[in-house]
Length: 168
Image (cartoon, rainbow, N blue to C red; front, side, top):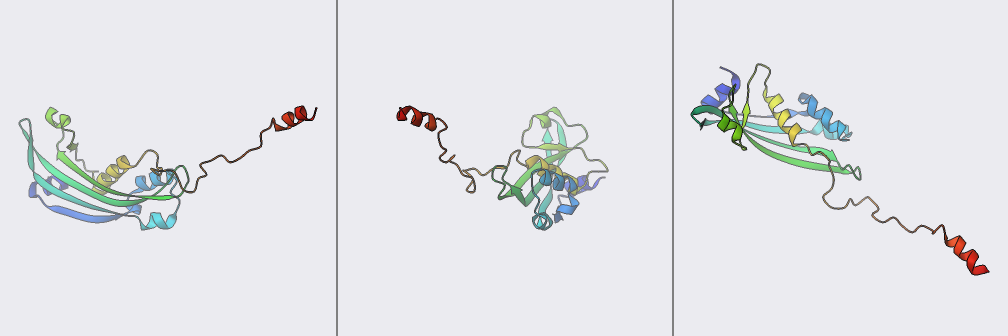
């Protein structure tokens, strides 16, 4: 019996904290989003709680269940003004453990299915969910403070022509 199945069957709890160094794909994605502050990246910690839940029926099939909670404060950067824009994430997920999901599970929008293999780890599960939760474009909801919103006053290039006409 695999680790996740055992956790679900016994309805046990597993929690911990992960450093960014144990989540290389997340680190790469943050750097692609413009996060270059090494101190912020080094200080990033992801807290998780994985809890076994009672089995749930989907059609006529009872499947072991897991609940995953993930909390992290990501040091993101606004794509408009390049200022730091930390984003706190508090994510909740439910998973049904199975190799072939029944149709009723596929139709349930609140429960994902987890096909557990030998390579599936808590780190990879947490990292997958954080990667899917990353915003596509990180921007302040309101106008960026450091940006000039007005174009300013520019001289009219035709003002000199107007002056020539007035001089006649």
